[in-house]
Length: 298
Image (cartoon, rainbow, N blue to C red):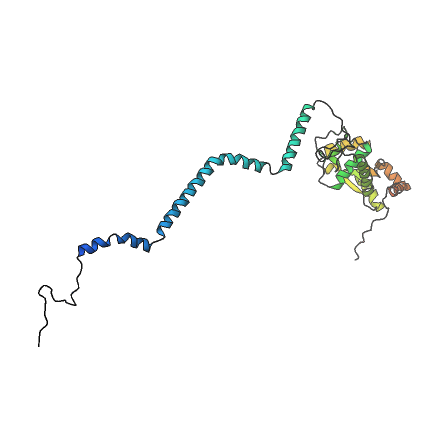
């Protein structure tokens, strides 16, 4: 049996013998690969960085444009906001122009034509009519209507009883309107239709009690309107006004259809001979027209 030949210059090959490269050479060759591995593992990091830089640039550019050109844009925006209500601006301009014209011509009287109305001044100017003056009969009717309508209505203490009263104090409509005279006539007719028998009296007066008794016996409809002047707050003004308008300085005063009848003695005589009943009937009241109260049955 022959042995295999071996070369003395070469060693036997060991299949388990694996050469490990020296640590120094392996580590030195692997360091350049690290950045490449990082780029492979994080490919979007570079893109995010570029995007962030771009957005930052856009923000700074927008801020610059806003700060530089904002002062130039703000007056334009303010002007647009101011000019939006064009109708209001036009009305203000017209009013200021008209006020300046009135100021220049204030010392000169300009007559107004009541039959001519311009659409631009309609609702702002109204033709002024002369003040309303009442006759004594109309003044008496106005005061009677004013007092009879509400118990709280009183004549102001500042009124001068010796002079005609201001119609605006006792009338409930515009006394300077073109229809004021017509409305006064309607008022006079209405107050004496509603109150055909009207008495101004004193509560603690024998003459007033007798007059009330005479009227009560007539059983009138509508019932007489009785005002006790001495119980009112405006007695110091109302009493002299009634004396001026009726020519009777003392109370009571009986008004039938808005006209004075006479003293208590005269009314007594008229009631006896039937003349009082005729006058009252012609004024619109009904004698024995009120329902009589039935007495209690025992």
